[in-house]
Length: 373
Image (cartoon, rainbow, N blue to C red; front, side, top):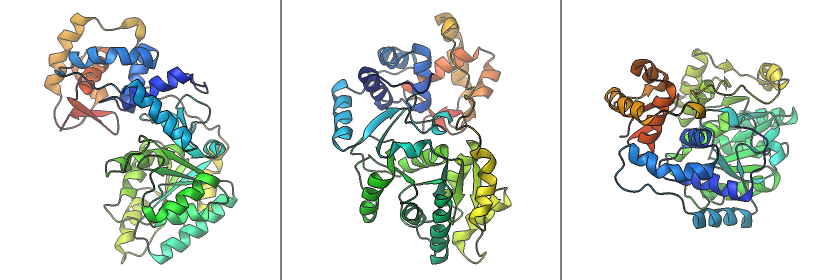
């Protein structure tokens, strides 16, 4: 897919309709786009693909009127909807395997092209961690790094406040217009004016628990690295750190007292290879080499469809029962499925696409799939 191309109004509408349609996630979106060349043709093909995957009732396609209303709501709010191929889209984010095809945003889009550091940590942060976050984010901001975080209580809030004047980006778990948590409503308004707020969910969506890991992959995906300030062993910040590592980003962690459970997660990260941070210089020195590189990465070689060699129906009929036999509720790597079936990658990808649109399988981080729970 080509980058830095402005979408027409009609194509932007089709992109929005496609990603908002039932059972279409980011990876499926890009596979459909790659196979059918544009979102309009992909929308036409979805019903048949879902039927081939075993779906009995019609799949829900996001209506054109609903997409137009959503676009209008975002514009009236003072925001904009941009596709991953467009110039204002965060350049590093578009290269993660499950990049959001469409994001809505409000604020200064120029910040999205600058070097960025994600900062995450405990909602119930200690005073020491809050003070250190404030100091680090202020110094890093003054050294040219934009600070990205998730606008949550605790560490997120402090990170945003400390970088308001130097550049901060907030990724929210709900719709662009939804203020959550309510106590950060004023801060969100300040970031809309002086920084940038990004949302993947539809306008007006109230955030749910399942939205936050998806939000976190955006924070790490936009950034050169992630700084974890304070985290318990079961903290969502550790999920963000894992995503960052799998995306090829640096993971930084501030050590804490072994007596404080809020430090166990960060201390474990350091034990497992995260970069120990005692001052802003630890981060700046580590990122200095990355900052001199162009803000791009090689395309993910994720088993692309070959439009010139579309699988024939006879081969698909042969492969479907083989693939269904291999799948289970336990996630398995798609490369492993290709190896075990001995069918061409395009055949396996087509069948997985059909099954996902039918709602029979779900995708997991790390290019894995399983039967839907």
